[in-house]
Length: 357
Ligand code: 13P
Ligand code: SF4
Image: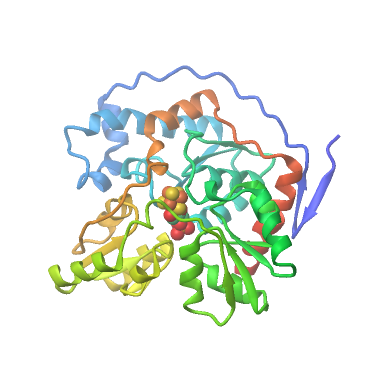
């Protein structure tokens, strides 16, 4: 018999259900007139980036995945950095880390396929212990999540007794379990200030911490973590773009160094950046982030010219249509979180979600 834990307003079993799923045969994956017809709407959204001659290689996967989702009662949660054929072709929900966590919490599907990186899938599992959470590629990690361990956090607690610890969601479940509350790029400042403490540890991203410190009187302590995508941008590069592309607007992610965000017209989460572009409709904009962002929103922002550079996230790019199909066909790889760790991590994630609702 499974006992239940009560965290926040939601009851959770601490012995997750083990579901069995029927075997499904591999679909034919041919570009038939039916496939063309059923994927035509998706193609309209990606035609600016995928030439017509290449669509027959993607479309059969798009149709097969969408059919299989119905059969498995599955939902695809996709991060804003997914490639356009995933973002527009098969995703049910797209968003930044906070939006995906909230959607995971309210999902009624039996299966969640996480098209993003491993910490995002763990967050879904933490919030849904009884659901099957699938990762199309278990190797899709994150340089921030890999920068810190649970033992490191215990060391920080010993070194800074009484200082609350806020962890960015880009961390493992074990790290979240050692922390007081989570934050994402969209709410880090609000979470830090909500604690009412004069001093807060905000880990593991030293740049997110530095960006929050620019806007608060709370003393921010941090960790030596950084995002491999955003740490490479520089303030000098931003100034060069301002000179060479007159009138360009600069929109940055808070994982960038502060000399970048200080040059920016707006700094915010990936969804915050998208909203800013949609609302302000700049003629030319530089999205200082991962490359797929501009590809994904171009169709919804006619008249906006996206100026490069951008950097690819090697982890996010591990997720592909063939891997998503394999994942749903064979129900793998399933994300598992130790129930005791999950319960402690859930407290930190739910504190954040409850502060936002
Ligand atoms: P967002 O929550 O802003 O989408 O950021 C997640 C991430 O990994 C950015 O690098
Ligand atoms: Fe992690 Fe950076 Fe990739 Fe986001 S972009 S998943 S922070 S490595």
